[in-house]
Image (tube, rainbow, N blue to C red):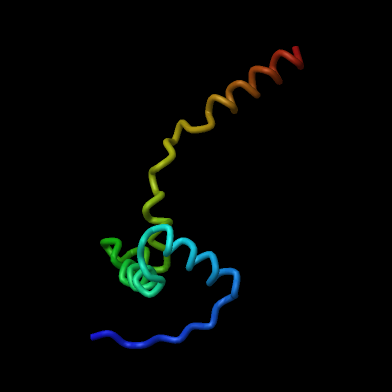
Amino acid sequence: MDAKLTLKLDGQVIARAKRYAKKSGQSLSRLVERYFASLGAGGSGDDEGSLPITASLIGIISEKAGTYEADEKAERLARKHK
């Protein structure tokens, strides 16, 4: 059963959300409903406070990411201070 919900949000946030909803071919209500439905639906419940988008990004960057730059910087500094 559908129920009505009234929210007070910043006007710019609402405008961006409406544009996003239109681009993705869904109503703003459906977008909000899907987001609310996704809260806490991430599995074990250990991370109830984290947002679904955060959970979806976990593991996306490997542990080795950025090591090339760090290694390169270390080599430059070693050459500079010889």
